Image 1 (cartoon, rainbow, N blue to C red):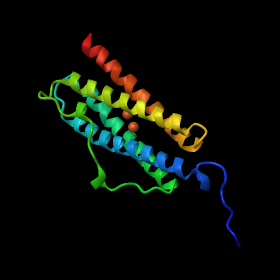
Image 2: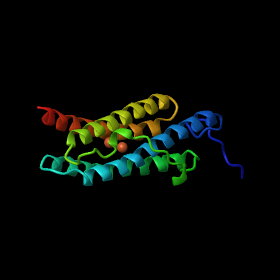
Image 3: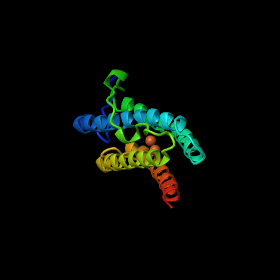
Image 4: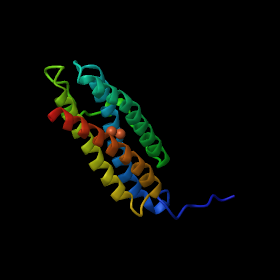
Length: 165
Ligand SMILES: [Fe+2]
Ligand SMILES: [Fe+2]
């Protein structure tokens, strides 16, 4: 019996180049999510003071969502015949989410989160654009993730409004 070949969609034989580019984008997004998990654990524990409590709780809840995003991205990389990288390939980049000098400096944390979420939103929009007419399954998955990030951004923008009022 001969096995049929796929000629439509991202798994088609002639889509190799697009598939490889997409795996690259998904891998970058995967690392961004992993780093966000690290940064949110840090910032859900370190901050001190009354005003820090809501922020810490919100970050604690987001850790699970960001972890879920990383897992979804990893699965999709595999489905596209890619390989999820090992930890030795990790390179950090979230400068704005490093702990502040004073642990009561909650504005620093909130601004760092806003920065990270904006970066994620920007990058997910890039993936969505790339997927247009190329891979609607990945696009659909990333649109759902993007909505979560837009929700996170909105929540932390609200925190910043109050802190700066
Ligand atoms: Fe995320
Ligand atoms: Fe997020």
